Length: 425
Ligand SMILES: Cc1ncc(COP(=O)(O)O)c(C=O)c1O
Image (cartoon, rainbow, N blue to C red; front, side, top):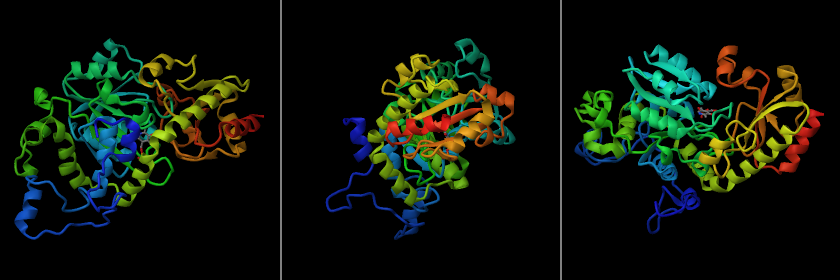
């Protein structure tokens, strides 16, 4: 479907039914698949034929939806995972093992920060965090001989910093490693990081892609552009024989376009089993079918709310890259010309107590550990999603303790603004 525009891909990419086949994606609610001979099945285990044998590794419903997400991002292959956390873990762990190191923007989602700074550390993977605004020199200084990847978020949750993807990609490539971008907030409707040099793109599909707060999920997309063999000493898992798969070398057998996702499926999905349920993949696809219609409304509401808040006397600061005075306005014009997302964050005069009091008074916006949904919701990150971070880490991530994250849904923007008005009063 490459010849079609993104709006058409949202609706029709991935699943293309044949004559007399179901118009809607079938939910293949089966753990396993039947074969006539052991030889047939053996070929699948040897990765000599493509097909399905067990849903812990792969399921056709998931693959239809993953193919749609790959088409939306302009990637060569994709896979669905059980959550966004699993997607980021897989994207990193597929190329970075014990003894490896990654460079990461410090302005990222708290759960991902924890994954990288605490859990991956326990697995022997170290990290150097850099400012999302780091200069070329500062980025270069963060690399080590054992660096395997660079990580960042297009629009960071909840600091709403906009990453200079091109700068980060060039730095990663100067050091012979791929750039992994979590593109959850803008979605491919508003930004396609691969077009700016990113090599791997991840998503928490739980957010706008699903869009209705119905199903937790994630996705990993490979651009197919990174030349693994050119840096084969850094990526032995892709460029040398895999003993757990009868000695196949992923890049030789599947090329740059297929190696990353095949290895991720064959090894990580097999061993960790973080597969998305086919039911959830079906729900995700329903969300994707209207993503291109919903995103502009989220942006419209986010922009209106950000403008209202920035002129209110009780508000100290508003973060929204669509505001002319925002630090990231220029980068947003480059990477997000149609707007970023509906998430606005702001600090009330009076800090954390004022934020807590204000949130209690909201009638339309519910307090939720969630974001990027059809219904407007809000949260104080310091007391919820980011409560494991120290004050210094909160500061580095650009999250003051009194910050309110407001995720503007699809309601009428006047109603949203009136709700904020009465709560502020
Ligand atoms: C940018 C980003 N990445 C990853 C995640 C983790 O996704 P999930 O909650 O689906 O595991 C989140 C969750 O909020 C997120 O905002």
